[in-house]
Amino acid sequence: MTYRVIQWATGNIGRAAVEGIVAHPELELVGAWVHSEGKAGRDVGEVCGLGALGVTASQDVDALLALGADCVHYSPLLGRPDEVIRLLEAGLNVVTPLGWFYPFRTTGAGVAEIEAACRKGGVTLHGSGIHPGGITERFPLMLSALCTNIRHVRAEEFSDIRNYAAEAVVREVMLFGKPLEEAANSVMLNVLGHGFKQSIDMIAAGLHIELDAEKRVTHEMAVATAPIEAPVGTIETGTVAAQRFTWQGTVKGEPVITVRVNWLMGEENLDPPWRLDGQRFEVAFDADPPLELVFHGMHPPEVGQDLDRLPGIIAPAMHCVNAIPYVCEAEPGIKTYLDLPLIAGRFSP
Ligand SMILES: NC(=O)c1ccc[n+]([C@@H]2O[C@H](COP(=O)([O-])OP(=O)(O)OC[C@H]3O[C@@H](n4cnc5c(N)ncnc54)[C@H](OP(=O)(O)O)[C@@H]3O)[C@@H](O)[C@H]2O)c1
Image 1 (cartoon, rainbow, N blue to C red):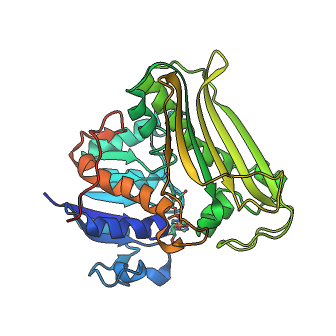
Image 2: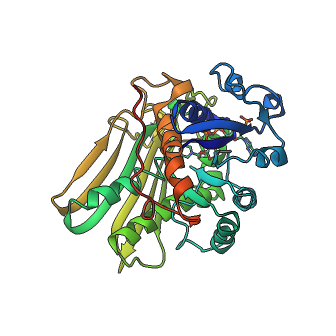
């Protein structure tokens, strides 16, 4: 069985996904939507630096819908629900690292329309990634099966953001280089928190926890004390150069699920002087036994190395790509890790 796939946008994630789709034995790349006019009409393999693949990048949504593909891997800058609904209604399964990880308890907004679009198209929407979309909830849920007396679950990222060469994401979504007051009050805080809060809800659903209605959110920032060079340009003195977001699910006011990111533009010239002490992701259980899982390999060995093939981008892209065969076979609707079978990668002989 071969599933015909369209890649939607060719940024960092999109480029890694194209490479992954082409390498996957059950997937065939049949189309690609691109945002920039300069990419339209070119071979998408050339756009992604992979050499010609015989698939032309396009901005013509109707033509892409008419390809009769099975699935879209949807990874533009920000997710547009109207666009996702259009894809679903047209009978295309959608896998994305942009949200819909577990959208049922956050606000509920849009869930009914999306479920209706899935039923109309006879297809499935699945949100995946690493953080959120993997380390945050899939791996804690898997690990939880080894524990009893679970009292607290933590998923935490420690990353040097000088490795992430996506200017719009780093500056406009993640708020690096912004004045403190602007970052503290940005609408992007909700965009960032939305997915992580959904992950907390998925863990709570899986572990049968009745959480308090509101999540606890903390946003700590450090500023640059000197200009910091990054692939997204200079982070100027006095602007946001490190952030620690903590989202918590509580029961009667006590935290039971903690999701945190430590995002630093290096470990020098920061006020306060924060440190990462090694880039990694951690999943930890206060339970019996008190398990801790540390993920290495999702950051380059040297800061600034492999920016074109960043492990922390390949991993979320592949988590999505590897989900495609399972999503295409799933019942219509929004499907999460609690619904889908175990998603696996494929051996490369
Ligand atoms: N869940 C996870 O674990 C995870 C991990 C990594 C990233 N992500 C998310 O995935 C998304 C993509 O990340 P990335 O690293 O690929 O970012 P990126 O390198 O900046 O790529 C963004 C893509 O969106 C396109 N784009 C720019 N402006 C647009 C607009 N106004 N409308 C539609 N498309 C637009 C760009 O097109 P051009 O190249 O043609 O300009 C590019 O293809 C981000 O939202 C990021 O937060 C999630």
